[in-house]
Image 1 (cartoon, rainbow, N blue to C red):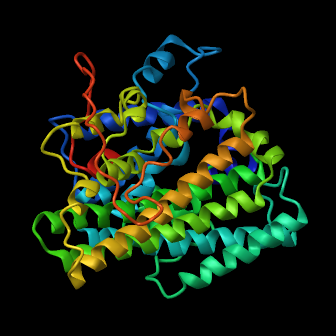
Image 2: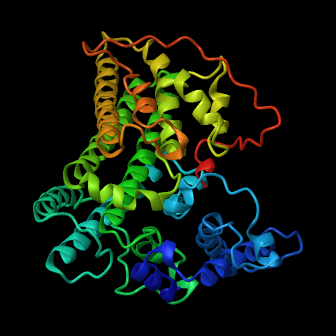
Image 3: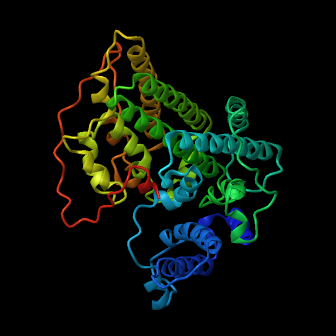
Length: 432
């Protein structure tokens, strides 16, 4: 394991020895067969280690090159099979979600607690990485670093974010070097090592791909926390518990503001040239494939008409179209019945406005990034039209500029999913 991490940092994930990557993909298939065979007898500790190894190895299987060049038929048969979209393995999202506890039907408070732990760790890790890079003592990601001015501003912004989260709960620290064995990463004590060594594995040695992945991970974590609190707020509103709903929305709004500040680091300190330098290696990985973000938008606003086709085209996200039914009420609909003349009702609407404003600012910034970084004729990641796709729904929000609630849009007809494999699970389990 230590050799894998060090080799990846030395050359970039895309440039690892092909035989090593093929072997890891084969190991994933072997592990999957063992773990889910009906006659397998494994102790609890061993199962945890093997389950963790499966999460790590699956990304190599999903990213495997299927061109067939120089490979035997046996290897190609092992590497074959439906993989889904590239975003999840590219960003190692399943490992991140394991630490957040999203697949354990955890409470909103538990998920937010883990989100705060991980956010504190990741922000500090990124800051220390950039400090070493600026001092010339970091060899990882040495190609095409930001300019001196960009680096100075990045360090200033990351320092401010690190101070803002300094009092949040802490994750166990990472070791000075990656653990050599699988079991070194298992359990709560291994969370720091997972975050430091296994989650962020860029395809290249470009410094800014490293930064790009860090923004992806921080956005994933904040989105999970916002989603957890939004789901809880919806439940409280359905039960008429306004005070509790308001508290959930307040906590979601604070995470949304942090998410916006994190995205501003990228916008202010990453040049177009440096972004385009590594974009090709990301393949078709796209935020469109980010399940937690799509789920959050649906629970806030409902299914947007302009997103139906994109959701339908991503097997991991197609289950979200089941929210196109008369029984589902997004937060937008529930807020219509909140009494504005009461203290608790006013608190709910105020917190919802804060959340809506921060998320709207983030979408505007995201659209601006698409215009800035992508040539006009270039398609967006994941097969969308890029900026034109984002501009189709970025203004969909809870409140208008005067602070009045927007009505629920005209319901969208659900597309036919006959013949398609759709994973219909509880709201957090599809993340894994």
